[in-house]
Image (cartoon, rainbow, N blue to C red; front, side, top):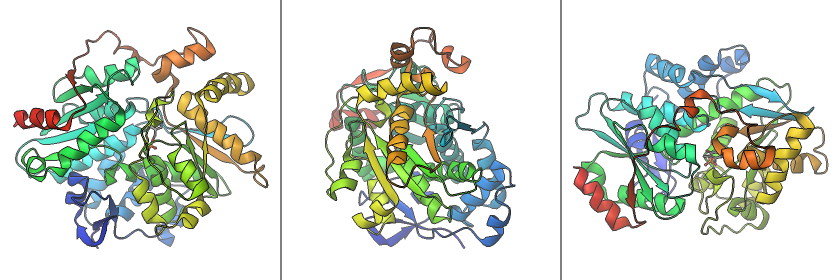
Length: 435
Ligand SMILES: *Cc1c(COP(=O)(O)O)cnc(C)c1O
């Protein structure tokens, strides 16, 4: 059986894998979801704890893509995606940290980007013309996507990032690769970047002429490998754990929900945000009120209108009651986040970066609630501390953060970026000129 995908806005219309992955955004502005999303078969659960990570990932990916991608191709794509370790570290008796930052760009977005780049290459192997990947980033997405596609034949990548709102080394990751990677420095917010990218896709003529495709967390193929590590972490525990997810666009959390749909036993999901607390506020009140984002020290989560919210709603049949039965939300200020970095270092010796510190606070808040004290929490640590050097050194002191070589070597490279106003028409004209 092959897999098909529908839009959250038109559940009765289906497209194939190639269209869902390359189009990224359906023309009705909804989000693609797989038609078939069922529990993994009994044979999988008989030996899932013994399989290699890559073999387990293959079975999970297979459950989503079915016969739409040949087995041997899918196995290779998964194997090449998972080329680095994903350890679970015990920080205190009940607080565990799933380290997702051991990939080439030191952030969890390497999983999605590496998988997507390889899948897109497979799906376009017989096509003519360049594939143009458009991506808006508030920090890590762009770096991960640039690295995943760099020098991949038949592709070019255009990255939009908000001027002055990504860290120095993050900017270097976006602007120093050259070759088939172009960076646009937008004089606006991340939401502006995201709006500009969306508008390009909604221009059907241009979208087709340039073979536009997206690499944001709206792309369904990015979510699939992100569900692998929920299985990887959970299988190291006897009882179903609580997953704590520092969230911005809620792709990571949605991937966890997909894992649960595929049969993974999860006690509860905890969504952790900074001051951009649209989802925790919704879980509290039942009212969804997206708004402008505000800048925080955990800048990869500065999102005022989370792009995966429609998928989360869809997975719960559109009901608030459904969502609150599985997800609990907490939001924290920069002040508390900063204090937590120092406190956790002192108490446990574990070094959290700002996004992880927001998650740590949420894990603590969860365990402090009635009846949760014994719960094992697994915090998804989404990036390496060295990516947020300024904040880290302010909290822990200068010279305390070791920068891994693959990031350190970027410091001396020259930034190359095109400046642009946060204006859709300007962006469209620039794209047209690419031909
Ligand atoms: C992207 C990112 C997040 C937010 O992930 P979402 O899937 O958008 O919720 C959190 N932390 C870091 C470091 C990130 O790069």
